[in-house]
Image (cartoon, rainbow, N blue to C red; front, side, top):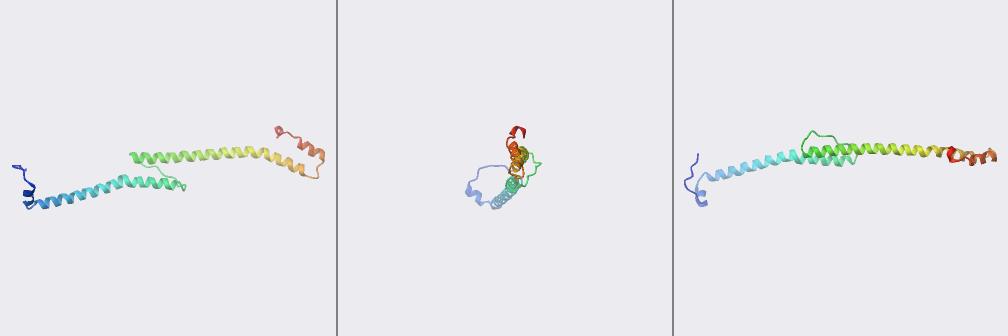
Length: 141
């Protein structure tokens, strides 16, 4: 134990021989603590954010991100991004189905119309039959 009997002035402290070594040791220990704290912060915070950024950039090239097992804010953010991409993929599939359905609905009557127009252009068919084809209403298609 240390017992303080009187306060020392800075000039008197500098005269104590082992004080330099204590100050140097404190600075070295402080640098090591700072260095290891930076490494821990890098691997726990910075690197996962960089991976998330990489996943976002890769999604532009249709590379799907994967979920993470982290339960902190970064894990929550990444899992929400994955969920968003899955929802977007599902919406794309729904849109493609709707477009295919509309395309089919348009092609069916057009095929009939094109068939009748080809028959009308045929020179081997009598004028009476051509007139009959021209009178066919769209409701019968």
